Image (cartoon, rainbow, N blue to C red; front, side, top):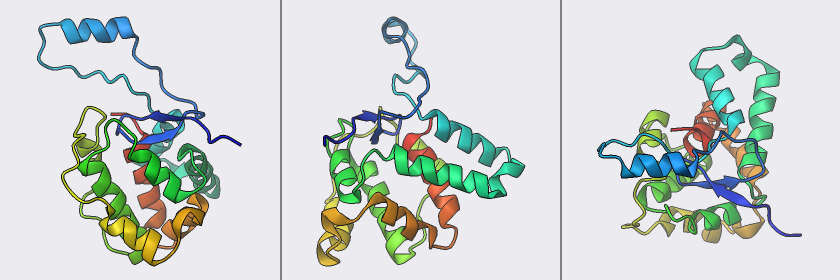
Length: 192
C-alpha cells in the first residue's frame, strides 16, 4: 500500500495532503504581488490545515470547549491524521525532503524529541517557533540535525517501527503534554 501524499504547510514541514485545508492563493494574484514594487509580500502560497486553524482559534479565544473530552478527542484524532505517516521515523525522514528543510526545522524536531522522551522544557514558545518556521524561511542546514534524532532512533532502537500514535501517547504523558501537542500542531500545520 503506497504512503499517503504529503503537502508542504506554511511552516515548511510536510504533512498529510488529505486533510481539509485553507484556500491556496491563486497563482495570478501571487505573481502580481511578486512583480509589484512593494518590498513587503505578506501572502503565502502554502495552505494550512483548517482543523488546526479552528482548534487554535478555540485555544486562543479561551473557548469553554477546550476543557472538554470532545475537544481533546478532536485534537488527538486530527493529530493522528495530519502527520501523514504512521511511523515517526518515516515522518522525520520525509521532512528532510522538504525544499525548506533547514536548521530551524531540524531544531524543532530535536527540541520536540527531547521534550517528549526526556521531559526537557522547550527553549522557545509556540509563538517563537511560528515566527522562526515559515516556508519562505531558512533552507540551509548548518548543524548536524541527527544528534538527538540518532539517540532516539538508533541507541534506543525505536527505529522505523515506532508509530506516530505511540509518539503522541508519550507526548501526552509529559507535564503540559496536551497543550504542547496542540501548540505544536499550530506551529507545524497552522497558518502564518
